[in-house]
Image 1 (cartoon, rainbow, N blue to C red):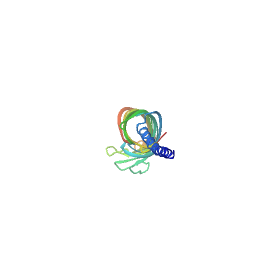
Image 2 (cartoon, one colour):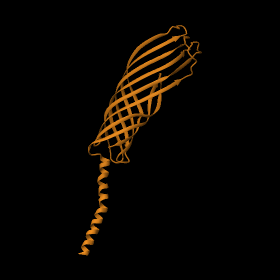
Image 3 (cartoon, rainbow, N blue to C red):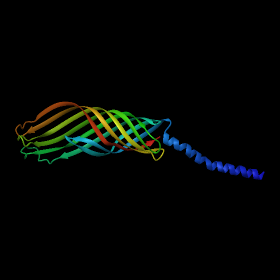
Image 4 (cartoon, one colour):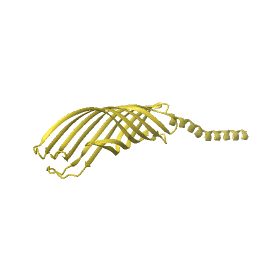
Length: 243
């Protein structure tokens, strides 16, 4: 009888030691495959590197802590919604002050631009493991406000001018996207994403100015409609929490 009790005790101990290993093998595929629907993800955009147009000067800029996103996962698919904010102040050239008798050529712009983007879309992940590429599509709306002071004197006609330009731009867009998600734990992940935009743009500009020849203040308003393409090499470098 004592020997039988000993055998049962040893078997029970081996079973206890074996249970965590079994649980770990079961949990790991759940973490990697995300088979069930209803998993949530909330993320903060830590860093962006995007193409910009400030007062007609095209280039690229970096932004930090500039967006939020939410995703609803169902297996390898996910619905997504997010908002990005890209505020920027800039100065091009050196101001000689309003007055008009500038040397030629002379150019100066100083102001700010606020770029807000609202998006909703869908993505699908590929592969297995902690590192997964994904591709998807967003549709959304971009609203840009820009205001800057300027001074200018062209070398081909001597009529220096100075004043303020205010511009608002509305851009609905369709945006294919690709990215990579790295998920080292069950609850935390890091994502990088590039986005390509097809944009329909409508802008309105109010230009208030004076010039050397016409010192009285004048205001001109005009609108512009155009379509275009835009690539953001790193629209999002984000950290997310899954639950």
